[in-house]
Each structure stands twice: as structure tokens, then as C-alpha cells.
Length: 331
Picture 1 (cartoon, rainbow, N blue to C red):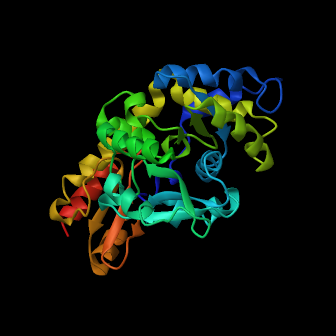
Picture 2 (tube, rainbow, N blue to C red):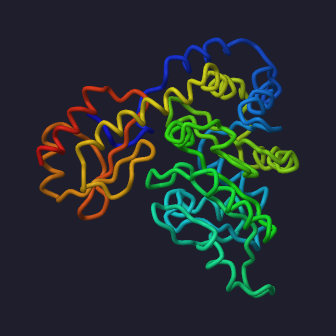
């Protein structure tokens, strides 16, 4: 019974069907009909003009989006535990040609106006210091916490006041949308670019960068090619994104994963380190307790010396979620 990561989940059958349907001759790179129609589909979903570029990984999506906003001498304000800081192997520095990550604090791996200003206000406006060029937030955060619309709007206000771009890492955007029960446009809010994740949510090898500023998309087209992410048979990536958007499969999958996490959360009580607002649970348990859970067949990651992380997915079986809940209750 795997609760290691939603990356470990199987690919949704609709994705395989869409890829097989796309297996016909078409224009290469992003000249195919499926790729060409993504802009219209994303614009409809988010309720404003959107430009969509597919890439193969979330790391590429985050870094290519930020590279359109940040010069090599600049910086990106993000949480100190953001994925771009902790889990992307230095890729932001590589793609952004040396730009710096400026680390902010915040409960639940979320940042706010105050924490952003605490980072950027002490920076002198001179050539000796890295200047902030963008803010990056994660929806849902690395601790499974979801930004409310007013929180994103507050960060947008800071970005506008200081002339910064605003990026959203949406690797688990579907889970945040399912939790908030709001339209996609409200969950994304007034960001300039969104890394819209699908691989964690039933996709196979396609992520989307959604630009709400067309000028940024124009720059990203060239950067995507230079970075080696302009795949020659791009229709297979576009097909996956279409399949996830059709019938709001992306949202249904997010709801299923969240429901499984909520089932487990009912048994955790005071063991929970963070409110469960997506599909991740951070649970206090001793090494002996973790070993007891593994003996019963559960797979998960340790989270420091005295905690564990459990991640549910679109295809987590109800009986497995209930079994884990019972096992935690029995500790």
C-alpha cells in the first residue's frame, strides 16, 4: 500500500487513450492541431487570455516560467522550503543563469506580504546586491496548504508595488482547487504564470506552463527550445493535457486524492503537523511507530526524526486509505 508520492501513481486510462488517438501523422514540434488549440482551452478554463506551452517536467515548467521574469543578476523570493529551493537540484540557478533564490519564512510553507517585505526591504538599490525580480508561490504548498484568493491578491499587490513578476508552482494545483472548491481562475488568482501540474495527478509526461502575459510566452518559446524541451512529437504531450482538461478530469482526480487524504486525517488527531488542505499528510510518529506501519505493508517517507509524510493519489483505493487510518489509530 503505497503512500510514498503521487508521482508513483499509475497513469490514468484516459491519458493512454488520448496518446493512442494522437498517434497519427501531424506537424512536428508544437505545430500540430492539439498543441495549437491549448491556448483557447486554457483561456476558457481560467477566464482570461492564456498562452500554454507544454514541457516534460515540473522543474522545467517552474524554471522556464521564472526565466522569463528574472535576469541573471536578479532574484526570486520564495519560501525557504519551496520546491525550487529544496528539490530541483539547482535547476533555477541553471535555467536563470545564476539568478538567486531569496528565501522567506512562513507557516505551512506559505509566504505572505510581511515575509516577502522582510526579505526585500533590506536590499539596497545598488549594483552590489541582488535585486528581486519575481515572487514564486506554491499552490498547494510543500506542506499541503492552499493559498486563499485574498492571500494571492495580497502578494500580487506587493509584486505590483515593487515591479516584480508573480509565479505559481502548481504541481498540485488540482488538489488546491478541489479543496478550495473554486473556479480555476480564482485558485490561480492574478499570477503572471502558472506551472500547471498533471504528472502527479494522473498524467504521464506532460506539464503545462500557462502564461497570462503573452509577452512572457513569446520569450518562453525560445527558452524552451534552447533548454531542449521542444519535443519533436509534441502532440503526445498536448494530447495528455487535453485529456486532463476534458470533462475536468484534472479536478476529479484531485478530489479523489483529497478524499483519500481526508479519510486518513480523521484518525491522526493531534499527530497532524499541518492542516490537511490537499493530498499530503505530515504525521508525528516515532521510529518504532513508523516501523510498525511498514510491517503492516504501508510505504511512505520519513519526515525528519519523528514524523512521516503520507501522500495520496487519484487512484488511492478507499480500502487502503481506511486501512492506513486504522493502523495510525492503533498506534
